[in-house]
Length: 366
Image (cartoon, rainbow, N blue to C red; front, side):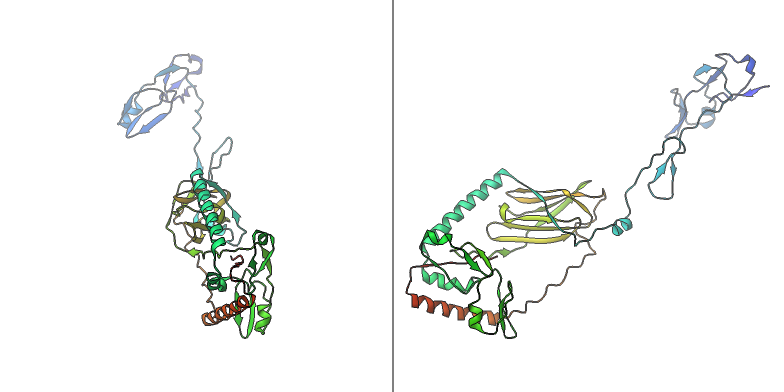
């Protein structure tokens, strides 16, 4: 009985009793179709005509075979996008990128606790910060020795306490300073500090309230920090998002950058008393532990690791709506009246004491 040969390129019939080692001429390779050219992987001959391709004689001789050759494994694509598995053998699953809808459902809450990011300070910036600290210290020491009472009376009203301490020498620095870190509040006849909220209607009782916080004396009034806008930009790579804040000569000790998986908070103090503060609700999700900050003299770079290798459309989440700032109900006229009253009280106390060469303690302010 004649059998059909399944060797590629043969297709003839043979007698099993007369099957020898070189009777079959076939192609051991597989057919290749590329750029309109057709051929076999086992030989170099190529053609554009399909009939000529079928008539290419085999490049190898051997025995006829009535067994069908095994077909190469073909991947089977399932209904889910990007999931691929094989027909047989070990199952291999390729997980494609998640859709925008899936990422939105899995987005963490923006109320998660924040963690301060690791900070890397360039040596050049550390040298600049050290020089600025030395200059500021020398300036404070010089002003501390030369301040006159008239100058101090002019700015006493900016302190967060109603009692003034007198500088009597270096030993005064060892004393504990008791003060209010908050601001005075006058509302519906009540007078109190917003840091301790001990309310009273008697103004003298309000003046006699002791501070609720202790610290060191500050003989020189601190400069008010100016909140300013600062130019910033961002770019991304395959697995990172980099936010660049162009703040020159930033102060490493006064700066902090903290984040959770969806919110980034940057607080940068630079050029002395300038402060840039911004909360950024991120477009995507980040890996906080793998994120860090680089500080150099010309800028601050925040490098965030993406939790998913997905391209971000924007830096900030367009769906986030910032909360409206509450209006400050504190009366400006009441504040001016309070300061004038305080100046008058302090002047009277100093005139009674008769010590016109003393230095006044300016308590710590936030």
